[in-house]
Image (cartoon, rainbow, N blue to C red; front, side, top):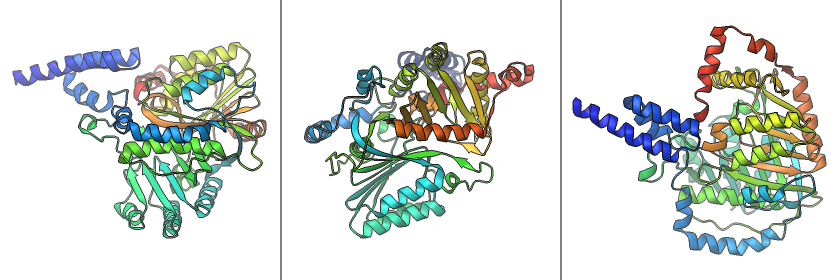
Length: 469
């Protein structure tokens, strides 16, 4: 027994050193170090599963086939760069965003805002039906339900007509997906693979990361990005979270090639295979929008999502409207929001009135309470569950993303964000959010601050989990 106790505390001490050296935030490093030394019996296995803040192996995977990837990039880069444009003056400090995304901003894209499930899935199914060469799909959640089977059948029909289909799903998000569903796609010649977060011996306990992206690309000319997964609940068929409020977008043009490049990287991690795709980045007919795709994930040296959203908030001059199902910001985001208000920016944040996670709801209420006197206007959406991840900056810039405003999306998930610089698209987003605001209730922050001692406790306990939420 004594030897087991000694082993546990030794492992705790070694893990604490590892946490101090590798955890990205000081708060997280302190929390892990203290718990690992004090309660190693519970904290050590928890740290092995949840403690990693950087996805190990993804970058190494690219290096394993560095020559092939470099050759591919050298071949496609001139075609992609031909579509890069100088940004409009409305994007300040563009160089910083470009360095974060490692891609340029493309011009002459045609964008379409897809509001809620029916519009999104109708567009996706139409896109599948028109595919001629290949379809790339990557979703966090895939369900074997009505819409899941409709998409499955549409993919099989295209595969039977010679269209290549590549499908990546997150094994955690899609843990309930039936083996029959997967096998039916594979039997049709569709290459369907899990993201394989735990690939490799070193990554066996790497369970805290998620591939949270929801994207589709058709023939390298059209792409879909946004908040909807594949499931009937996203069509509002969940009785507890209905109606479901969400947003996706379609983009035709060179930006689709950027989405394709993100998929290719994930596909290589999941399968160690490179696939032959169309890299002829071409402007869309009647396309006027400037679009940049920002991919973020725990494999990157920089915290791309955190830096991008901080920079975006700092760039706002008149308006900053944010909608997110989960609002658990870190100190940098909080400071940026407070500074925006001080600059005279109209800052509004819409969060769900009804949440699918009590812990996230309590944590969000803590941060709303903390920012009660900042001048930020917080709204709770009342007409069902709000799941969209959209941001409007001033009158010309909007983002449609898979990333929530929380630590998990900023640091632990693989995410993708489409930044659109186009006055007409931004106007559509503005009208959409104004409609959401009419269905929302302004949060009484005074009442929140003056709530009883016992009501404060769960909010403060919930915020302790912020580093992994």
